[in-house]
Image (tube, rainbow, N blue to C red; front, side):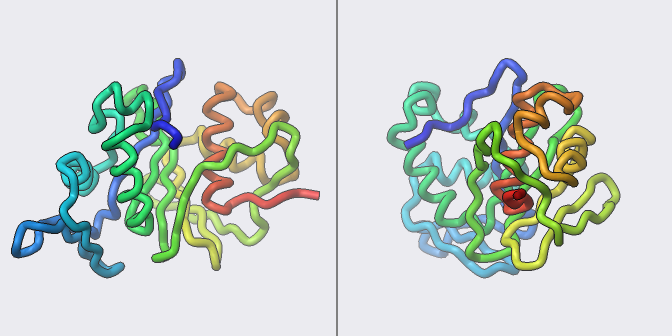
Length: 208
């Protein structure tokens, strides 16, 4: 089991939240947590306290799992952390994953599921692997962000900060992570983290 990502010297944060239209509450017998919304209803029978606490916090906004899981468990990936991850994977179609930095300027990007079968894992693209933005991805300007979407994909990506859009712009032509790190006006770790989230959401394709 992979432990939760630790904050790096760059202070990248990996945040988890529920769709804003998802409500969390107990059933009538107070034996199961019920998550309800336009995407249907999910029941989590007899959840551990840590699971209930995490979901209630995620209903209110993005959280770091490291703030929920005891430090000794987060470092090893054992016990309650494993249970929490299994639950989050089971309801991943309701879970928004956000990349953020500890600089008080808000999130960098968010990966938002739009399908009940959506499953998201950031992808580590090999340094010399040529990739580009999927040709049919559309970019729409919103009030405080840009939205990347593509017909048939199970996630949208919301771009909250210019750093993420710089990486998106580099993907307009075939390139490699190695080349992107060299030219992007960003720390290498941030560039690769943004690319990993875009690739995990299906926004990139292999370039010939």
